[in-house]
Length: 162
Ligand code: SF4
Ligand code: SF4
Image (cartoon, rainbow, N blue to C red):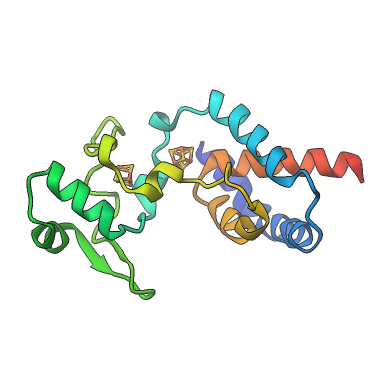
């Protein structure tokens, strides 16, 4: 997994150039190709052997997430915030610490069933309107090996059509 991220780092400039071009002129089937690659790649990618997202970046905690997770942990939302969260530069609640406080040693999540919506949808490669998510996808190629492979796959598909 880490080797994939090393490669991504090396290819970052080239990937950025390609994704910028894709953003300017998005193919009509972009969402469908992302969806397909996402399904294929996650079929063989075992997130429990990776957990790099949980180890290195924080999800945003919306108020609904905070209420739900605090209730699950039998904590008052205020206490949950004091104990685990801080406000980032964009004014969002994020984790105080990295790796995530809820990541267990076997890479499972202590609050999996009630985890933040952002954790559920990470790495956002099967969303609609992928064109608007290409800058985020580029960033995620440096954190998430699955995203790196998905982007590489799309690059191969579209370059073969050029
Ligand atoms: S809440 Fe769970 S899924 Fe989300 S970052 Fe923490 S450990 Fe990972
Ligand atoms: S979503 Fe990506 S970074 Fe997170 S565990 Fe799965 S492969 Fe790793």
